[in-house]
Length: 72
Image 1 (cartoon, rainbow, N blue to C red):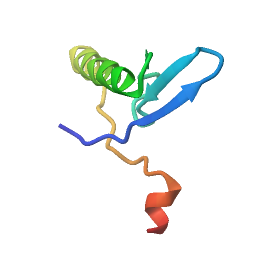
Image 2 (cartoon, one colour; image 1 turned 90 degrees about the vertical axis):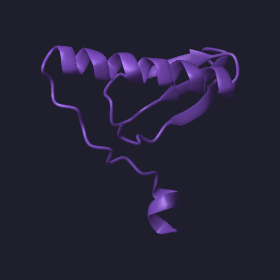
Image 3 (cartoon, rainbow, N blue to C red; image 1 turned 120 degrees about the horizontal axis):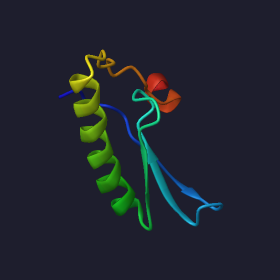
């Protein structure tokens, strides 16, 4: 399985944490804690990948890397 980067951030508007996977378009999840958001986005990733495979869609390579990791 590809190792996709996951962003987790607090959303004032949603009053909770959002986790997303930039390489998988529209793959995101909500949680009341960072840990919950992470667990939920991992479930969303599995569903995203299964749906893509079932529909014959190409699975994207993991390309996204935050700038801080590109500098270090």
